Length: 243
Image (cartoon, rainbow, N blue to C red; front, side, top):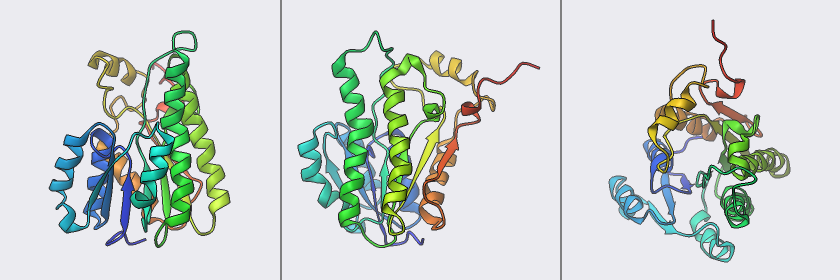
């Protein structure tokens, strides 16, 4: 698919990976619908960087944990979009015994329920050559008990990705990306990232450029659906052996 002139809707586009994904699609000529919740400053700065509304881009604010608000905002956010990137997520490092029910519910609301609802709405109002890309996590094949609800919510979204690919074919393609460590969580010290990298066979973070190239590839390749692309430095394979 030629992305030039197509509308691409990216959730969580006001910061970090979401901003990088938006830039990558804009570089291919796409018009961006940029979603944010609390990162208004970052979203507006990105909008201006990309050329603003005069270039066909727009911003949308919504708390994805608020389902009525999502259902109100999504039809305009997704109207005539050819690409939906479900990027927004919440990560809480909590075990089954340490997390509250509210923390568990919020992670499932943002990481699973919201993307599924957005897929449903996208299917009803999307544009030409539609494709959905769900941002997952390499842990979907080996859930981390230290991040109990986060891991389960991403695993559920991976299953939903495959199920939706079957249900929405042949009209709409649905794929996923399972990243390894890209950026350290802002609430954790960098030493945590260094420890994580010891479990990555390639021994380094996933570059934003590589991650974004994968998303663009899944959008443009019209022969792929139901695929999950592991861009994780081999982390999903397990901890490298010591020679």
